[in-house]
Image (tube, rainbow, N blue to C red; front, side, top):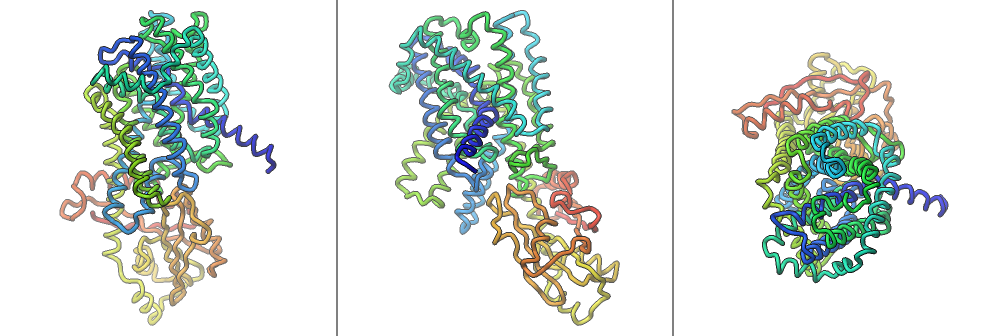
Length: 625
């Protein structure tokens, strides 16, 4: 590819990133300054305006620019981002400590669970805040805000099936117009009141804390609203790559945001009464309705970042064994990370509508917003520090200094949002806790199933020896038995031999392993172990961002000395029927029953591994946990 083509490709990806990745953080000016300067009885005095603007500016520089765009995005797991990919990367560095691996896994799963809370609150508050512009233009339409918001959100989630690539191509130009418009709005007011630029000096933020005390600390719960798209930025890295995302942020998105925030500040210095909606009052009256329409489209786009991130994280969770198997639809032939997960899409839509009809205003939702975001940010920092120490070789003094600086900021934001739990912050916490219980239950349940299968299985080596001495009738062809234990006889093999009284000429014990890397390298993809009597042990490895395709993997086994003719190959699979038994030492009974319910409704392993149905025989087996 020529240099000109490379630049065009980079520009196209950067445009797509503006449309998909930066929609969330790009629409934060709609509500951030209004929420922060009117919270807890605060008044928009010049002192508070300068202080809050300074905090917003430096929070975006430190948290978004330095922490996420520069530091966290360096922690890509072979190109994949998001907290699940980061957790897998951190776990690879602590393989020798089972307790530490367990602790990091629990922390990572909880962070991922909170991200789903963010995925619910972001669409609700973003679209609500835009539609609420109608109250400024025509106060009589206030009672239509919630129904209009619900309709817009319904169409947003219906659009997801068309894929991130098409959505990004459509949304990118719109978001470019959005950023240009909000930047020009800010510039027009800054020109009238240029002294607002004094707030670039960090001393104003420090003075704000000195003069406002606990009220100033509580204001951090509003300031964090200016950072809400940072985690989605990292989660969507696999869709576009780090270079386009960084280019779009530093050259386009950050300048536009700063100009608009400072423009709103300049307006409030001149007209403090505009605090009820400084964003829309920044616009000329003749442009108000077009701006409301553009804001509605922009907030729809804002929701795309967390929705795409939720899809990516769900696929990673499935592969890593923390989520039940679900259908995954690929929406791009060029980018494997661009996917659509119908079940997750439906779940998010239902919960978003619950949030809209339950809270009914962006002011009420702002109390629920920050906790999920700041909790995930803190966990991301912890995991990234483990990666920096164990895989990048950061020395302890550097690690301590960097970690202390980052965690002080993260914990401060999180603590400020804990104050809002009783005012709506409980909603994302309850939602995150529910997702956490589901994910840990699935993981623990699969461990119990594998344990029961291993304990109840016959040893493979003596079985093969006995078969060699007392051979049954052999039929032509190859039988592939999916098994979790290479040292035990698969239940499907025993059932086939017991009921059909035959054995195939070649019998392959196939185990599928999911690695803690997004893509398996070619030299680690296949491991073959020949055994006596035309038995073979075969391990096929996939990365957590890959779609396991067993027929394709088997077609590549010829170079390892085991050619497959798929038309002469039969796959045998034991389909477990999970039974919750309170007499057995597993989980508590309600979690056993939850796991059994999820197992019954999960996507069959045959579909997940893309095994053709006309080459498959399933044999049932009951497993008590």
